[in-house]
Every structure is written in structure tokens, then in C-alpha cells.
Length: 164
Image 1 (spheres, rainbow, N blue to C red):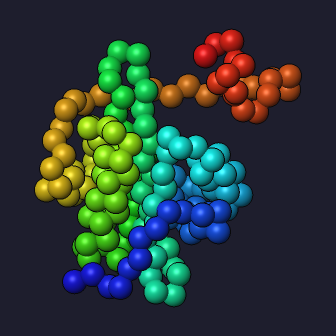
Image 2: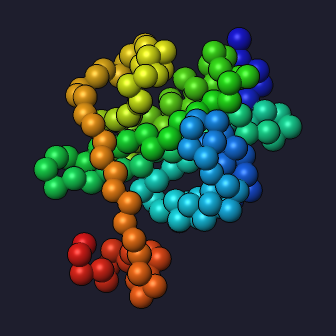
């Protein structure tokens, strides 16, 4: 049975709660980092962050969904992050957050939603499959840390950046 939970779009006031939940998810994040990232995302029509809040305003979950543009395939939407605090799992909150994300995707005119999950989160995979997701591929993710010289700007403007 689900507690009384409201679902709404995130605001800048949610940055600390989103940081705390991101850390629980395994991605240590400070409130400042969260606020900086949230500010960019909230300014974009190609992203949505939805939160689940208790009656007292406590954020107990969030989902980030965005449009993914690829040169080799049709546009799809992807879940960038998704978590419900452990204390409130198995109460229908995650299912409702994903349903809200799906609605945002449909309203955006997109017909495919993708979610990625660490291979060791087997219980999470079962949850996604129960909600109609199916495994489409396995892959390895490679990251490379890059050094930024003082002369480079901190953000890329897609309209003026020659690489884009």
C-alpha cells in the first residue's frame, strides 16, 4: 500500500534531497553539485526530473528522463537516474515515478523509453521487466578522465562549439 505521496516536477529547492538520494544510489553528490546540474537540466525542454514527495514535502524518490538523439537511430528517451529511498521501496512509488516519466515521453512524441542498470542489480532488473521493459543488449561502459586546461571554458554551447 502506498503512503500519501505527491508527484511533481523537481525544482531547485529539491537539489539537496536529490543529492542525498544520488549518494544512496551509489553516485556521491554534494548539494552544490546537484544544484549546478539541476539548474542546467531544468532549463532544458529535452529533460524532465520528477520527484515523489510525502505530505510534509520530504522527497523520497526521483526520476530523470531525457531525449536521446543519435545519428544512427531514431530519437528515444532514456532514464538518466532513478531512485526511491530504501525505506519507501516496494510501496508503488517507483512504479508511479516511471509511469510519470513514460507519460512525459509520450507527450514528447517519442515511442521508446530506455533504462540502463548495473549488471549486479538483479532485483532491479526483475522490477523493470515486470513493468514491461525487456533487455535489448549487454555492453561495457568505458570512461576516460580528461584534463581540462585553464583556457577551456566550463560548458559547451552546442550552437557555437565547432566540434558539435
